[in-house]
Amino acid sequence: MRLGLVGSPGYPELAVIVSRVRVMADELGIQLYGDDVIQDVAGPDSSDLKDHLADLDAMLTLGGDGTLLRGARTAGPHGVPVLGCNLGKLGFLTAGPVDRLEEMMRLLHAGDCVEEERLTLEVEAAGSSWYAINDAVVHKSGAARLLRVRVWVDDDAVGQYSADGIIVSTATGSTAYSLSAGGPVLVPSLDALVAVPICPHTLAIRPLVVGADSTISIEILSGMKGTLVTIDGEARGELTAGDRVTIRRSPHPLRLLRLPGDNFFSVLRRKLRWGDVRPDEE
Image (cartoon, rainbow, N blue to C red; front, side, top):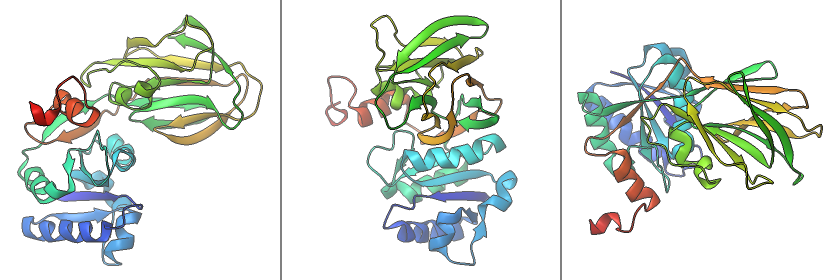
């Protein structure tokens, strides 16, 4: 098995965790390929992930959701399945905590992880394109001023929005920024996109759910500087009046792995405290 490793640079015990991964890899006969973060802690004899992306059987991320998203944006276009080991606090998308690392690697090697196909986004703006797992956000940077945009679904004009910004999210991203902005929770298997305004300047503009085969376009009407497009929480490009951001289903879905026995609702209860009964009281 050829396994890619992506690590979080902010985790102080990463070197210890990578040592545990290497011990398990030797035991199971797994060849490891690390990103720049992993190579910094694993030493000069480690193999470079960038040179072997097309050959990987799976990718293991060591960190939180941000690390998983970074790894997934690398693995997704190559059809490589991704398993996340959580070293942080929430880790909603990760499959299990670090104290189950060895168990996770055994399940992965045996082919016993459960694979879910997750819809992803292709985002185009200002001559550039990006691949997104969670969301694309058009928003202002710096000054607290309203952003004015016009939103289209396919060839139909939805209307003009005056807001702090707008989030276009996948079902996977519906439990992230979209949820904080008042958007609905979408079950990951749902083939849909959701457009969520951020602090709209009218009660008439609410979150809008459309089919996943729709194309959402956002035309920038404001003339002020500092309008950005952000992909999965990372700023990618600056926009000006007249620019249009186009968001559609990517042809490369994410193959996300989870552990047997887990499902979306058990994770929702455990990590977002969903419902009246705490998970340890069930």
